[in-house]
Image (cartoon, rainbow, N blue to C red):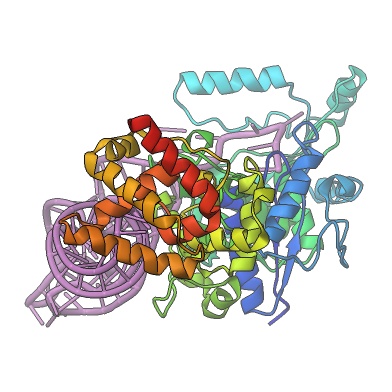
Length: 489
RNA sequence: AGCGGUAUCGUCUAGUGGUUAGGACGAGAGAUUCUCAUUCUCUAAACAGGGGUUCAAUUCCCCUUACCGCCGCCA
């Protein structure tokens, strides 16, 4: 078997989409599994929509996900350049070849003419196919049109190619994930391969690039299935080897429509900003359409690659549901080491003055707060009471503090705690005894702790109380508790 | 409209011509903990519908339905 070469070919008209990331992943997995080469190609033929920031975003996101490419615009490779706009001088030669072989022809139709025909077809509820009216233009006619200043586009002659390589008008290929796919190509219109401005269209450029880059397997979204038939015909017309194709189901939003901005994040970088770990993202997205043979769902990309078989990918669409992603994200957060967490949490702690805490205090704070986090960004709202002198008392905490019991607890706490040695270990013991004392009076430990928690943090839930006291220190603790007692009087 | 594709718990999926149709997330109940979270235990939850083929169909075939995609001088 010849060398496996796959590619991901994003268009830089937006940030790296989560769906593109999944396609990239499956290509990457296929390459890994088959000891092949993973190529990154930037399809920026649409100059108007291309932006450098999108190209950067695509690079950064792919890298962050761990999907490193072997050949690409930045690292180069034997079949470059890997940016389509730098390949414009390559395509005319192949257009000419097709023209010479009669598989392509010039079309002088104007946009207005074409639009009118489409409108007409729509009115009659007929599918629109190009009329082929430029197919048999004589040289004189063409010369005349040219003299009028008209520039031709080049169209591919489907019927001619189909007849040259196939018995009937049916074209069939064996898709790696969907099985045999058929299409009656007589239903397809002769499509443009080179625009009148001299730039290639997508369908043509892909074929030339895939051919020249020796791509052996094309794995992409199923929205490309109908393109595949056109592309196969071009490969054949050029006498090139046709790669194998595999078409993946789409990722849909929970309402079964295309995943878009109104459903939340769509770009990998947006997910990251929201506090998702790239490890969780890639793992989650792998599970959309693919299932591990051992039932273990938490896996690194490399582990998945070992187990991966492309024909086992589900061929149906799947819905992007946040529940499982969130679960997975919290799971990955728990697997992070404390030093790593300290670093990765920092961007989400910008609103606080971290210099208020010593490194040891910061460490401890992270240790006692990371567990319930679903998103890294959840840390923002989980830690306000570690900072500043005073604290905002939430409504629920207010209710707790208004009870007589709470006041009694707090007064007693002030009384006793002033003599406590303020280490976490000691506080733990003292607090336990403190709870015991009240328990003897018929006050539940839970109620006792609530009073202290509400006064010190302004909340009814949060991190381990002992640790909180130890981290913020005796002064802040006393300050906050006495404020509460003062206000009640 | 035409063409192509898909159909197992709410979601992601496993699975088989004969199974108590399995797992995960989520949901509900309970236990543990100062709270939240964790952890543990338990529960509910699916083969889209109709025809065939067959001793037997969720599994194979056909039709219907639903959903998705494609029909650009976008990619």
